[in-house]
Image (tube, rainbow, N blue to C red):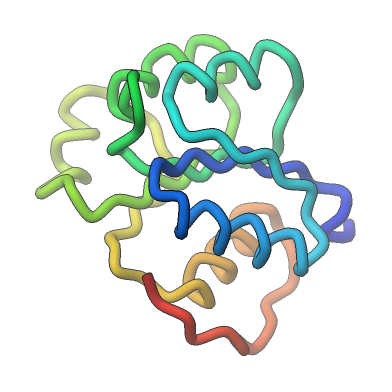
Length: 135
């Protein structure tokens, strides 16, 4: 499969990070839909199917944390990467609450690390990281 075979939903409240995600993943060939609130994640999942969700926890209106149980009800098999700089001990807390996510990444992180994780989760071949941008 090629990258353009995959559709990624990205939820991020920070406008600069949203632009960076969108530009970077589109340049890689993925189809990308950007949202900034947990409720928008749910609306997009009602409208379309996605191969991956990348979400921050701190989102406008409904947080990623509040949205996760509803996301799992709608899309139980959707791979999810949680990226956050605002949540201490999130891995343990998520497991205690029974939230099923594929990967946790803490900000700041390099875009190259995130891209590598996305390729791994989507079953795409590894590539040498070229982008050292961190945010």
